[in-house]
Image (cartoon, rainbow, N blue to C red):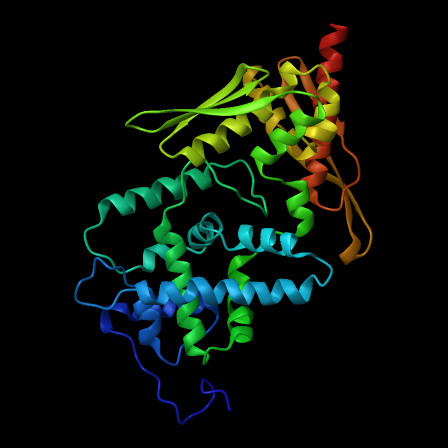
Length: 353
């Protein structure tokens, strides 16, 4: 019999000062711990010198969560090769992904810690940067602020506490923990949302352009510059190389339509339609227009086969601009389709004027 259901297994209570935190995280997980001290330890930072910290649990959680997700991928995607499985696992249990999971569920506020204002500041900066992002995406390669490792460590430690509490049962760990990781990135998501650097190089190769990314470093950080046929088209500064590189690639993708003469083709193919909402929003800011307003005009099909048609309207000084997009399986994609049509309509409008 499962020891969680057996009356013969006594419940180990947490320390008095951690009762509320343990109860709150149990509620988030929808799992009641038999040994609540495990969860207490998972929620204790190494700055608390008088209590065992999460460091040992984090070590176990890193491996067990990765293995539980690997088992899920192997069973859920029997036709994928090793490279595809590896890529899916990487984006779904990366430091960036797990840090965002911690922010989404507010786990950091339950972390017992002592006098670590710099860590608190970094977590707040990261959380604020996520809150300012335009829209969520199932694949996140990084934002404007590097994910603090403490957030990912916290998620892994909690996963380890669950894993040990269920007698090292990987299947039960996954059943309990998978809800926290949603939305999990699928192979389709990776194809629709490739890494910005990969997308940049593929797009330039398609159009016969030579692209390079160069760095200029100093004591405060790194400037990454994207060079197209030897000419700098975008540069971004950040404290870490990977963030400056990522942001420079995003900026270059946004600006490529200014350097290549196939604007419409780039939107529909190279940059893909998922960039359209962002590009339309940027255009509205430049023209000092109101923010685009998206609406679902129609939805058809059964619950598991629904398709949506969305519209976008923009209030301007000259009147309201309105257009509908193509039918799509997800509302986000339908909104981007409408935005793409609006961008093309605005270009045509400018040409006629």
